[in-house]
Length: 142
Image (cartoon, rainbow, N blue to C red; front, side, top):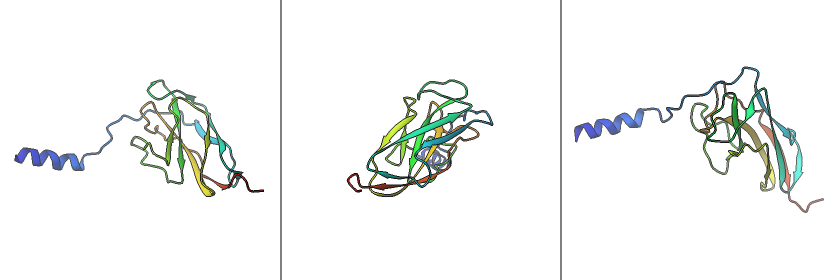
C-alpha cells in the first residue's frame, strides 16, 4: 500500500509530456495570409494559413521539417513543450489543411497559428504566427 501511495505522489509531480520535440529550420515561419490584423468581416470567413521554409504533412505522418496547422481562437499560446489541446479554442487541421472557414459570434476575436508535429506537439523552436484581431459583424449588417 505504501508503494502505491509513493507511485501516485510521483505521478502527480512528473511532467505529463514525454514527447521528443522535432526540430525545424531556424528560418521557417508560419503566418496568417488572410484575414489581416484589424480586419472587419461579416458572418463566417475563411482563414488562409501560410508556412515558409518547411512543409505541411498530416497528423500521424512523421517527416522531417513538416507539421500541420493549429488555429488558436481567443486564447494565449499553450505550453510549447506539450501536446496542443483540441477544443473549440484550439482547432486542429490534422489533414494538412491550409485554409478553414470560421464561424465566430459577432465581436472582436483573436486568432493565431501554431504549427504542431505528427503528434500535435510544437516544434523546437516553436513556429507560431503573430496573434491578430478580427471583428466579426452579424452576416446581415450593412
